Image (tube, rainbow, N blue to C red; front, side, top):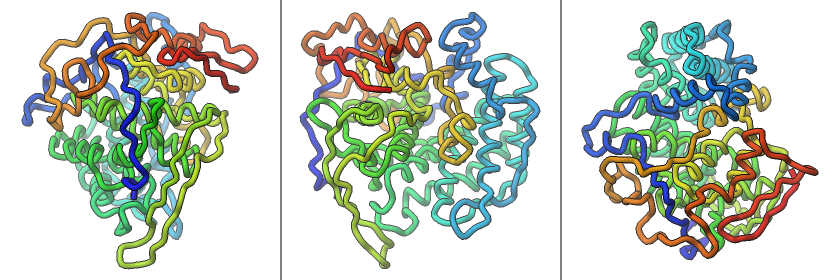
Length: 483
C-alpha cells in the first residue's frame, strides 16, 4: 500500500557537516558480544555530568530547564508511589493506567533532579517508586490500548530505572524482570502480530511505542539480540512505524512527508517524539538511526515542524487497509495534511534539534524554530493531566542542549552495513549523499542558520510582534509564520 504512494528518491541531500560526531558507544559496539553502555538510554554519563556542570555554572538555557523540572509537582522528594498489581488501559476495563504513568514520571523526574543537584533524597524517592512497582505489577490488561501502555510506560520505566541502576537500594534484577515479563512481551508481540490485524491497521505511533519499549528493554536488560530486533524493525519493519513507512515520500525540497500528518497534529507530534526517542537511545549505544537512509528521520521531523508552525506542506494521498485478519476489513484514505493549531506543542524538539545542529552540524531550521518556541521544555504534568501530556519524558532544554562538536570523535568508523552501526560511514553521511555544501551555504559556520532559534531558546533573543524570523541557510530565503 505504501509503496503505491510513490516513495520519492529525488530529495535534496543533506550536506556533510564539518564536525563529525560518532555515536557514543561506537567503539564498544564494534563487536557483537561487546557490553552495552550504562547509563545508556536517553542519557549517558557525559550527558548527566554536562547538565550538572552547566546548572552549577548558571549557564543558560540549562538553568531555565532545571527550573522547569524543580517546579513540577512530580519532581518532589515527598512523592509516594501507589503500585497496582494489574494496570488497565482501554474501553471496557476499569482504567487505572494514570496511576502508573504519574508514578513513572515522578521516578524519572526525581532521578534526573538527583543527577543535576546531587541531592540523595531525590534518588531515594525514585528508587522507592520503582521498587514498589517492580514488586507489585504483574500484568497489563485492557483493550488494544494495552499495547500502548506496554510501549509507552515500558520505555519510560526503563529510562527512569537506568538513572538509578547503581543505587545501593535499587532492585535492579527485579526491575529487569518487570521489563522482560510484563512490558516487553506485549510490545514484541505487537511488532510481530499487530493484535491480529492487517499490518496497516494501526498508525505509525503504535509501532513506535512498541519499538521504543523493545529497544529500551534490550539496553536496560543487557540483551543485545533484543536491541538488534528493534533496530531491524526501525529499518525494515512491515508495519507503518518503520522509517520508510512512517515517512513514505521525500520531496524535492528535502522535506519528508510524515504519513500521520493525514490523521491529526497530536499523533504526528507523538510519532516524531517517539522516533526521536528510539534514535537517541540507539545513538547512545553506537547505532546511528538518526542518519539512516540519508537522515530520513530529520527530513520527516522538518516536515512536521514546518506544518505544526502553520506552514504549507505537500501531502500524497494514501489508502491503507484496516481490519482483522480473517475478519472485518475496510480501507481508509488520507488525502491531505490535517489542520493544525500552531499553539500546540509537546517536548519533542530539543533532542532532535541539538542532535542535528550541534552533534552533526546539519541545517534544521524548522526543527530548531519549533525547539525555540517550546523552550524551556517541561515534562509529564506540564502539558495537561491526560495521558497525551505524559507520552514523552520531556525536559529536553535541560537534558539535550549541548555545545557544538568541534572535532570529529575518535575511534573506529562503524561498518555501514552492520546493524550495530546503522547506515553511517566515515563522515556521518549515507553513501551517495552530497559531500559539498549547497549553493551559498557556509559549512564553516555550523548552526549559524539556526542562530535566531537557539538565541530564543537561550532567552537572549527577541520574538517581536508574535513573529519569529529565521533564514533558511540552505535556500537563502526567509520563512515567516505566526506563533
